[in-house]
Image (tube, rainbow, N blue to C red; front, side, top):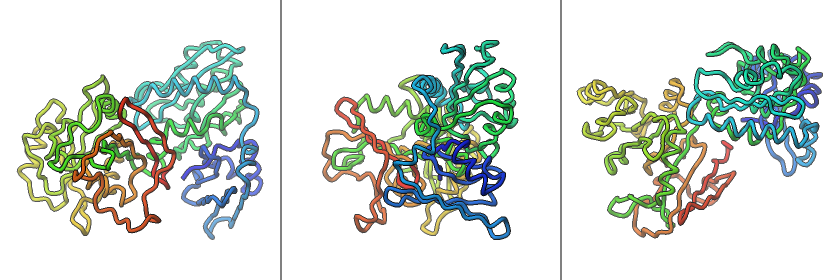
Length: 453
């Protein structure tokens, strides 16, 4: 759960009068709601709920801590007052430039966030940067290096709050301070518990003006994967499917090549390298023998996750015989007895994971996703089939759906979903943040699952 980026110097510090020193630790999302606290997130919780044209927010502490209950009730059309209103059109243009730079890191920095930075002195851009690869310099460092001595007295625009801790690189706040930056404009706070407002706090303690919340929604959407991963410790899960007008993903004889057009398939290849892993069920492998690799354009190869409770995967399958076999991970039931086949897969360079099973006999997909998160897999693209789609939806593990719709009718073909326990319209799975895109004679529908947007 996130909230809009409220200007901490206004609303956040006002709340701080009631919460003492707690205000510096508030996590705020792109919609401006106070949520959990960084160093106090085990001690405090927050709840938000829409109520007509108002929002209701509550922050609570357990009884053995200072008993605090803060209720904030404000109209949506008044919520703009909670944001910093000092931003100029020039501020927006510079941060928009930082957003465009940040997007260039997609597919190369996971599980880190994509970040862009721009240094401006006397109305001129004197330095730019973005996070290019995992373990490499952060965006702020790259931009400040390019700016050199011109960074002193300049404004730094950054899509995400600078880090304040030692990780693969030193804290970025130190570089910002040492460079002599006098003002910093930040799109969103970093929800990482190691940061989460601390970067802003340190900068302000060094008399740097910090303004938070510009283009907050766009900055949040850029890093929705990171925000989900760092707060829930689960990958961001996207379902990708191609279907006919009547909702079929294959003909009655099982044939699915090709429902979507070539433009759609090229885009799907791009999505593969933009995700850490591609996941399919064993039914898809048996039916199509896919490669699950990036071939239409250059990009890093994703991990390949095969959900196969009873290890029916043929040893001759493409995912076990090509040059990317070391990217293949087969998830099997913890009681699977195919020991010789498991050993052969691992001898070839693949991996086999025993995963808990459910009462129904399938894999516990949450357990699988938790294991993937432990290996820093932050974004998973699910490409089939219908049982996997439905199981993930039923378990409420899906964050986004991307559906290509082709101008075809397949009649008695195979439906996209199977076995979802939906008995009425009130129980329907509903998408939010809907986007449509025309790809020649195909339509791409993208939407977030309600409760995850």
